[in-house]
Length: 403
Image (tube, helix red, strand yellow):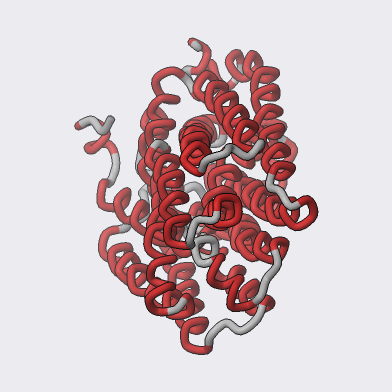
């Protein structure tokens, strides 16, 4: 997928730094999910509180992505990333040193961890500005593969919590973040192509563009499905199938690994066959998978298989959406990355919190899963309705008219 032309066109050290920063940030962003069973037991949380606990970092990250998107346009992605990393590292160390003793405090920690999720609005423009339009899919796919950091949280956090206590895991998590920060300082550089800062009126003008709302909705489904499930699956497998926290984390890690691994594939596939065609297949697959698993499959391995299929579709969809965004909004890529990323986080918040409330009110996760399956189906319908206009207007200029 990575050609010699691609390596010559951009700045590989910056691309790697953006990926590594994004990777470690995502690891801590969803950490409350893999630690959720142990935290809930110690703090005596009910199902709704557990759902809200894992959902708050997603909502916080969603809102802070807009802030980061504006800062990226004002002071550049390099300095914006430095500020965010320092705040998250300090927040984890404070929580480790003083401890987390109640539901309100764990929610406050979730707000701080949301800033790690907001790294999305920094890492992608940092990498994107170095590459030409025809290489946006692979460049953003590689940078966006930092989603894989969620795998590390699911794999290691429950086991470390069992051995050393979940509060100590918060302190341990600051160590790889410090390594990522040092790497970022050494390797990352600003692109020579830096659009001038925009006024508030110019930012607001994006909201008057219908395509911006479509992209926000599409990413709310793809990234919302990925992040919401990544945060919720450890608790889901524990509740639904009685798996211990460590094994439930392994099951969740397998799903997340599948979704994060194929994000670059989704961007590359969209480069080759077109983002519209790629997204259509992915939404149909995701809607079917989530609907099937909502009926409560009898064995954990069956649910694992179907969730992996759904996460593959969501992960590839993430890459496909961001293959299209820079082509439609190249000059507004900073603010659009923030806005689209924001709605992706809101989608994850919706899914994670609705699963908790569904379990609390009905004793089952089915309602929460079915609602999200319907959203994926609606995204497919919406894409089918606008694809002709996209292909004959801005899409024709970007090379989408051929599909």
